[in-house]
Length: 192
Image 1 (tube, rainbow, N blue to C red):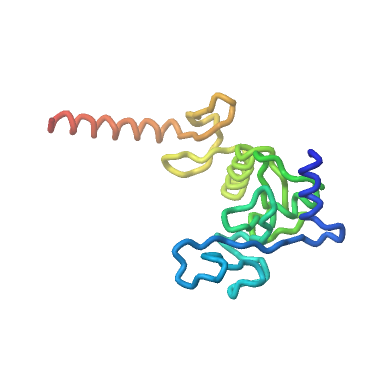
Image 2 (spheres, rainbow, N blue to C red):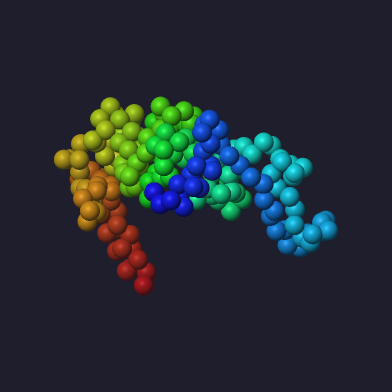
């Protein structure tokens, strides 16, 4: 971490573990209720709709922290990112993703969070968890045609260049699908 990043990190994570915060002015173009300073409206504790800097959107808890590097357009950061960074003692890298072990995105306890090195690793964890809950075996794949999980040895499997498996289909489901496709193709040729 560079000295500048360390300064920002220290200003966000105070020694007592509390989160720092600051208020800011947000430009509001075409505002009917302009303040004497122009079309600026206070945010933070001066805003009439202030709820303590914590909001829940899309089933994630957000904390108002406008100086954080992963801030959204409104000045908020997802709470699980802050909890993971506090535990690590440094900011997450841009490509790192925080995973909720119990898949409850509002449960941001440190013991429920895991930092994944990339979004691809995060998606593999979710795919394996879905397979485990569906059939008891995390290594099995879901057939994209019949939606049932099965051993990849019994399927046609599509593999990305980097070695990740993306999807599979049973040989029987594939044969039926190809038969249907050829019938549709023949009908289309017949009417043209």
